[in-house]
Length: 137
Image (cartoon, rainbow, N blue to C red; front, side, top):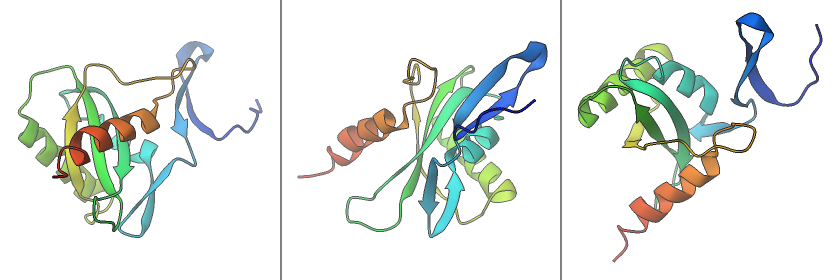
């Protein structure tokens, strides 16, 4: 069966259904290395405490390479610093030890479009307005 090229990464589910994971071209540049948001998300969502999550990149306040921020919806109680350490270990062992998580933020629900895609731009704006906006004098 041939599917129309549309730029989304999809997974075929049992029963003939499909799940959209996100844009293939939605990549971040972490320390000069391009990596897909979806690739990071598929790895980190394997954590036992995580129901779903979204990975975004944000520019640091003073300029420089993009930084990785993860927004997570939890399904179990977990210490936030331990969660970040566990996620960093997953990235180090399975993707690239140079990819560092700047922050893990907890959120009740990920913002989504009408077609159920995660609105990473909204999360990026949320992070920039709350984290970097509050650090300015």
